[in-house]
Image (cartoon, rainbow, N blue to C red; front, side, top):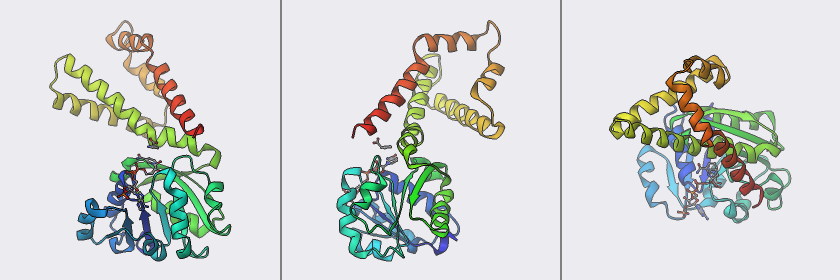
Length: 267
Ligand SMILES: NC(=O)C1=CN([C@@H]2O[C@H](COP(=O)(O)OP(=O)(O)OC[C@H]3O[C@@H](n4cnc5c(N)ncnc54)[C@H](OP(=O)(O)O)[C@@H]3O)[C@@H](O)[C@H]2O)C=CC1
Ligand SMILES: O=C(O)[C@@H]1CCC=N1
């Protein structure tokens, strides 16, 4: 049960705060079971009113937790692991790193080899319990994996993958939300050019994108199958789609994904 899991989020920034917001909406989540830390915790103090323990003592946070989530930037992970190591017991805490591109092997250069360590890649839709979180782990027991999945399933849903796919998962799931949002912005701009005010254009685009996503999720179909139902022969949809492709729409998306991926691989 989520209510029995003690959690620390060390380095509670953009992604950490999305996870906190998602967790706080769970009926069976106990805010007093959650520590969140950052060096300058002032902007998180409002969470104390909800019962969350907000401070900058990483060691205390790690000591009291079952699941220790590392929400710091990738270049801070090793230093944080060294800092909290004295509080870690391989039979107690499970470490979960959200850091892009930091491998399990790299973390084990600091950690006791018996420690259970996961990498998890959620996205900021955790805020509204709509994240997809790809996870992989090492040294996990059935019960530790169950706890980690319970946590991430409560803020969306989780998929267990091989570690070799974690970078690809980062691009598609975590960066992906930004790609979709940029697409939505472009659609809103187009909507304004053809006559809508920004607010109305946003309303129409938001619901259209939500509808398209729900259609794919609920009907489990390939996008092109649904696109065929919209493209009236000689109609206005197909001319627009073809023009977008002439301008490099799909190619730009695929190239962007590849360049993002190469950036992680080059680190
Ligand atoms: N943003 C996203 O959508 C996603 C991010 N990620 C990964 O998640 C991690 C966090 O990203 P994001 O939330 O965007 O980054 P942020 O910079 O917003 O958050 C990192 C936080 O770490 C805190 N921090 C830095 N040093 C310490 C320290 N010594 N002790 C405690 N806290 C510290 C910072 O606060 P302060 O300076 O006050 O200490 C800051 O709030 C990264 O590794 C990123 O790769 C993964 C998927 C998606
Ligand atoms: O842009 C980044 O590096 C991080 C990783 C995924 C989302 N934000």
